[in-house]
Image 1 (cartoon, rainbow, N blue to C red):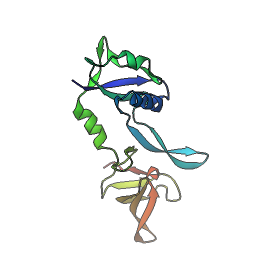
Image 2 (cartoon, rainbow, N blue to C red):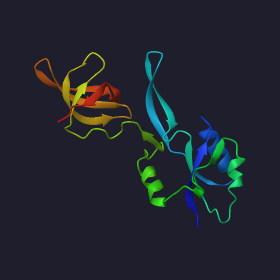
Image 3 (cartoon, rainbow, N blue to C red):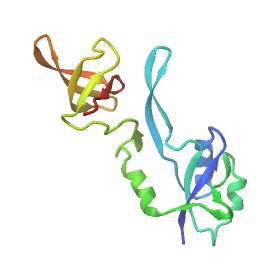
Length: 168
């Protein structure tokens, strides 16, 4: 019976391990995450692994040898608890996949943190410390906030990493 097993990779070799396991016709899943990082005073979007140094492979260990994993470039080992290989139920992998963006297949860092109507505060940029109400996400990394500025309510678009929720 095929099950999802956890594969421990070498440092920063997740993609190499994924490619090599796919070449060997294994069913492999490497969840990726889109995050904003500061590089040279600018915010840039980068793709990272959701679980650094880990990926999932669906195999039937009664049929396929686990020795192939040890000899695959990028793979360190299959994860074990004692002498038992760690496996995941199909539902868990399906839940992880359900949170991916439909087109890109990437998870969004901070995605879905806010609900319409949540109170938020700007923590970066020219609007620092001004409070507002979260209205919507605009694209992958921007949000629309309703703020009271110059004696009137104004919709402001900010990068999502410029706001934090206000505790109720």
